[in-house]
Length: 323
Ligand SMILES: Cc1cc2nc3c(=O)[nH]c(=O)nc-3n(C[C@H](O)[C@H](O)[C@H](O)COP(=O)(O)O)c2cc1C
Image 1: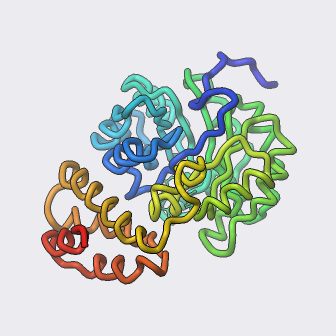
Image 2 (image 1 turned 180 degrees about the vertical axis):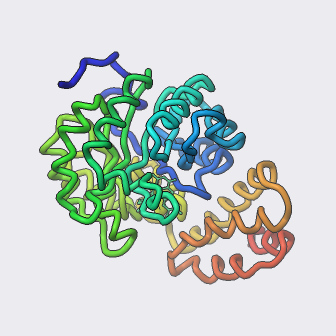
């Protein structure tokens, strides 16, 4: 039965509608999160997934430790763990809490090879009974909020409905739902009809994630699903102002004339932060280009393409210089 656990505080204020920056491996490192917090202040940010190796000692990397302690400007940071071995996850949860983490999340969505073949991430959905045991065990250790980020199912998009009681009984505090199956990876469209049905079938707060690339789509998902908040991934990486657009503090779309200037300014600021975090011209350029892979607006695409072809930081900087 659902054990009444400590009133874990959610990472957002009661009654507010949180807009969260999604965890994205390779992208939402502490430098990028710092920039977002300074410029558009997401209500909640997540670490990239912290890989937990199947050993209870030293099972997270030194860099991940640095990520965990890097809270900025009072914006709640949720630390996301990905792994499969229960005791290793328990040890990692304790390690990150000792380092100061208050909010923990477990990844039940990642569709990619190495992780899923080890039955971590989305593959945990293949064994729901074991998953229930894992979550309940972790709940005993986690003092603050404990959430899951979940796809609609492993290969059946209705699987999530069979997991809702398990989540509630395991003492999960909120769900982030990306309504695609694990098998589907990123093909097709996120089906927020599933999200709406999840909201109806659980009393847990639900955060909608998936394919929110514009303020209009975000508003529609909010209206059609009744979710407690939104999580923005690729759309925010392409356009950090998406947070402000959704709050009505920025036009829902920028005028064509300002789009290029906005992209330049974003990249200039990110470059300064990436030069402080990463080492060597090659790595810094690669990390900048990873961001550009998510820029698809036809009006800035020619510039994005030029930047992706750039072979030196000097050239990259020239291209981002105010025109
Ligand atoms: C490059 C990349 C890295 C990602 N890394 C993670 C991750 O570390 N943890 C996680 O839970 N999801 C990860 N995701 C999934 C996103 O958090 C999000 O669920 C997905 O992209 C759908 O949301 P979006 O359409 O707003 O991007 C990643 C997605 C991408 C494209």
